[in-house]
Image (cartoon, rainbow, N blue to C red):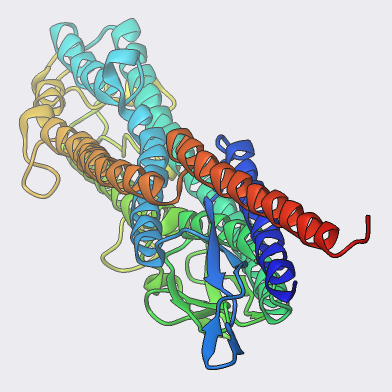
Length: 464
């Protein structure tokens, strides 16, 4: 009697275990298209055997736990590549805005205004006493100065926009680190109670990936189920259920927001994520382009004014500065030259077309036109220097785009590999379902047979 009831108990326990396992399969199938979901597996364990006389007798099976299938090392690789790709993407997006300012084929840039300016002096040389040609020269100068002003202002606007994006990104980083810290606490609590924290771990993995999209991260997994997160340079972001918020503060020297952690400026140590791409464009590439633009403006102002003051105007007086002279605010720097470039002449007769003071002489007008072919900036002509500026911006974008594409291919491979490990395969789940179904049916059959035997035994000893 006891052995038959024991058999029924073992079979009943198997029924419950197989039923629970089928529920795990059903959950996997339900989440086959859920982003970030890691498939779960039922972990079956033999229950402790009992000693019957001198023999150990098995007591059946139980579903010990449900485990999510994930590869933390692979997740770290994906987060690293995500961080790199996001950095390159934000950099390319930022510098594409700058590159658009120098798109000569689309009618933006300085090349046309530069050519028109020097050509106006060439035209003036054909008739140095012409009032209309003199006015055209002043207008060409004003157009050129206006183009420098507008380009400089546009770059400043782009830079300020990136600065605001830095502030917003830091805020997003803080939101995600707070969420990760909160999930750490929940995961520990669920793990202690013996339940499966798989769905919480999926949420945390998603948050960690999103965090790496914003800033470079280094993640350490603890035995208690929590994670610690720092930047690759060691700045603490999350420790257990505590998060360390970053902050921003305006740098009085640059006017841009620097990133701080616990009072320490970490701006230069940020090595990945959207934040790094924004900072690289804001603090390096755009200032470099702006500096080149200022150098070109300052070189033009100096060269044109020098030649203008060497000649004589229409009334025979010494030539005055064509452009308002630029005075650097800092020795050795031309910062602000492009933004403040203006034509100082207001009267067309003040253009010094003559070199000897004789009315009708065009020697100085010709000399002013020839500045176009003279090395006036860093040993280069204005046209060559400007072309190099365009090339530098274009090369920065091109190189970053190429690297972004390469990183994207690596990330795609890693994501595919992650999918093969953690993703749900309907074929595999179907196989598991059949396996658990057959085990369930077998256990049910055992119960049925044991019940029949019990009834037969009882009937044997029941008086008729």
